[in-house]
Length: 103
Image 1: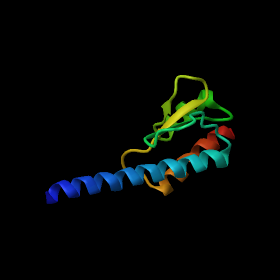
Image 2 (image 1 turned 60 degrees about the horizontal axis):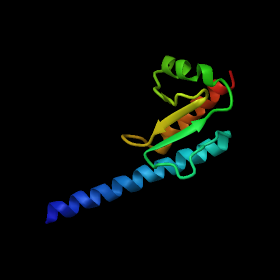
Image 3 (image 1 turned 90 degrees about the vertical axis):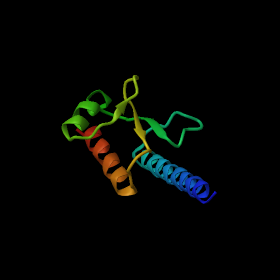
Image 4 (image 1 turned 120 degrees about the vertical axis):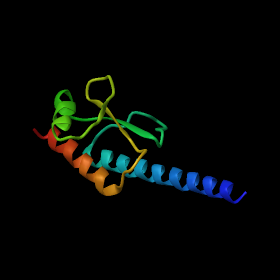
């Protein structure tokens, strides 16, 4: 019984962390003017459209050692909120994406 409570508690904490990262990243999307087309996006992943240079974004990010998921539609990308991630790394990711937009 004790271990079950710990697992459930841990899952709840993890879900809150994932939701927090998703909301934070979506705030960054708004800051940079990136459209998040989903009406009710999943907390696990955020899909968004960049405004400029979507055709070179994937390659430029790879050159920097940053892996971002292309969405199969021009200018559309996805960022997962699972795994080890914090607001600092999300802010750096968003700033790097924005810098590619400015090229």
